[in-house]
Length: 179
Image (cartoon, rainbow, N blue to C red):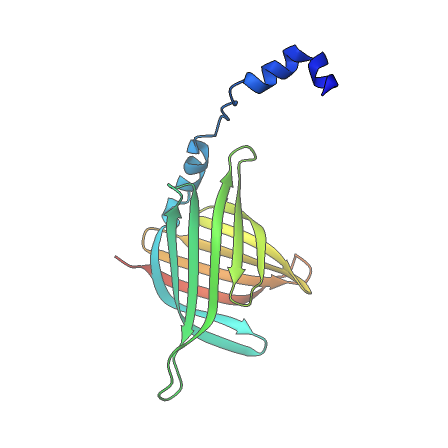
């Protein structure tokens, strides 16, 4: 206590000072970056196929993209369903959820993706002519997805490469925007 009395001016100032008001960013730069991805927003349905080992799986696919947090992020949900055999119910074979953010200081997009198995990852999302692209490292190589999206169609191709030079297609989606 003796030390505090030795500095009454500083302690008194600290104890009587009003709390500093933090200057929170207004989010407009985030919203402007996300607005450049507005061509993705909507509900999209169609057909897709994906290679699962030696098996090529055909699915009915839905992608739902929504603005969230006052337009500061995009929420993307993908669901791939196959019909049930005989009288069994349809079964989900692909379930993914992603949040797309924009870093205004770096001028970059990030896609944080989750799948139903519990796996998740952060990937750089890049604007390409007519759409977006992202790449991720996987055991044995790399996967690259490129989605070309116009006002009514979403065409996405997934490719795998062991060396980053030669690519093999492993997935394709052809969706139409729902009204």
